[in-house]
Image (cartoon, rainbow, N blue to C red; front, top):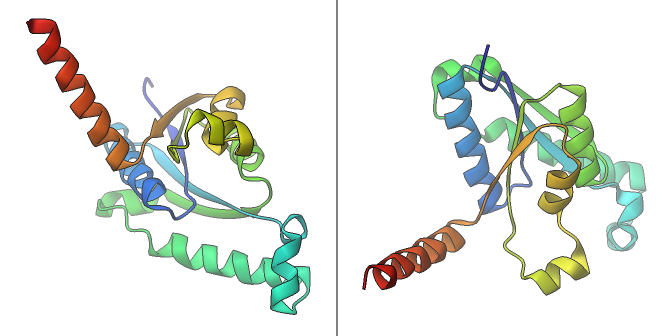
Length: 167
């Protein structure tokens, strides 16, 4: 069957990942796909500063982060009632880009959908980029959804270029 049988959408609960979730739902509805809504919760041991302020063990912090993520995933509404039966919600602990690629590989995903943060090239060089890593390492196609403000700015730039080209 042509199309996307299995779609993984990576969410971090940012505004952009919510937009990516909406786009993934539209694609899943259009193609009759299974949709895996995936969140990689950071490992508290890799976030050492987080342990100092909580006075909790790393396991307790990790469990709290995981429970919060599961609750937030459950609250995401697909907007299509028929799609709900084809959605799997998953939270895993780990490095987000590696976890996304590993999960997509395990599920034999045909497509990964995720938001981008819109960092400048310099900041991206300093921090790395989850989407950039996933695009390089993914076992399947990846659609990135930029923040709506970036899309609007790009649309304005494209319109200006088209007007200038017509002159």
